Image 1: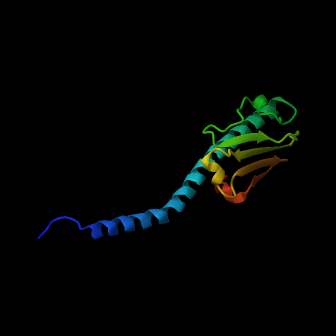
Image 2: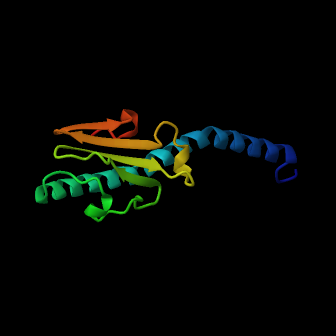
Image 3: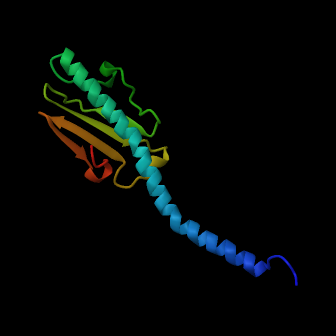
Length: 134
């Protein structure tokens, strides 16, 4: 008896491995997109806390990230951060836009995350792109 693998057996194993990998790839990509959103979430939370600190020391919220000493790019570099220019005494809006040169720009439906606080009410858009307990 010969010991070893035939070419047919080897091709069959490679084909099965390829099929399994092809089925797992979209799920893996979606997991990566979701985990990279945490870059935006943490940046938005930092801005929100800085806004509250700013409001305690001033009349209202600021519309400039530089006033808060926060950069306009998230820590991991996946998102461009912006404050609404219409910030007021009781309202502000934070936007995190996926940077087009990064893989995160392919995160369908979640390339722009918006956090608004108006008179104590919090609005997060799109709702499906935010973690549940937030």
